[in-house]
Image 1 (cartoon, rainbow, N blue to C red):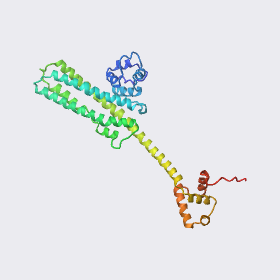
Image 2 (image 1 turned 180 degrees about the vertical axis):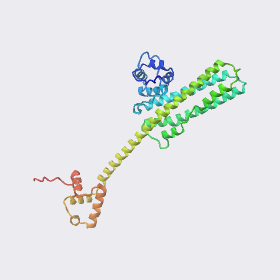
Image 3 (image 1 turned 90 degrees about the vertical axis):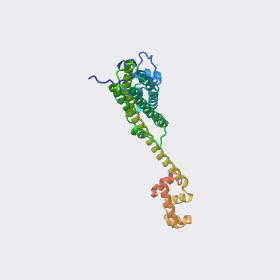
Image 4 (image 1 turned 30 degrees about the vertical axis):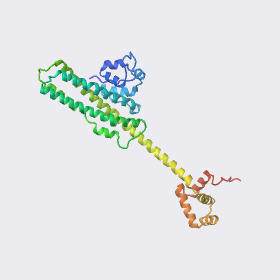
Length: 318
């Protein structure tokens, strides 16, 4: 069995299409126009202003089922644009196209034909609701993450938990058409075309869900984690700065005098006499100093006093 090839930035874009024409839809969703000649993938993406690593990640997954991309190289913005374009393609083009093909090929007065159209319409409504939910909840959330913001009410796990298989109705529809449709239909060729489109749509939906499950969800989880760490570090830094600011601002003049006296080696009684306060008040000041500075030893207070200009360093050789 031939091993699937991992496409790289140096491969020619035309070779990718020769290997698998299904890549054409990915090109359209990324906004890459045809007419690129013999340009490489990287050259074509650069010209179309598309992130190359994101394009390759999607192509290697949807065409060959290969997930080898590093999340840090993928652009969340490019991936979001791709998914949004995929929704537009499927809802505005594929769903109406298959509906028309089915309607034209089935007998208008045939009960089974009407029921098949009903099954298709129910499926179309289901898939439309599924994609509109993503556009309303998931996509704006990703935009917030890209801009460095998080949400207290939503995360990617909320999406992952409800992200169920979206093509079950298509499988049922295929079976109904193949097994139970009467032979005397209006246009068998058109029905065959519609059935082939249904098979293609089933494969397309599976690939679309794979991109969301295997690329999007891990990428957004990584972004959430990094933002969470960044916010924790910022909070720690802000707390430390606030602590330092509070220490500088709340140390009273009397407490500074007590520190100087401690550095000079005076006892609590001597400090009380020099400052005309009681020994009990000296002890209270020392407790407050230790609490504010988180320094308890005379040596530590000496270092603090020197660093903050409360005492001068004496030259021992003088």
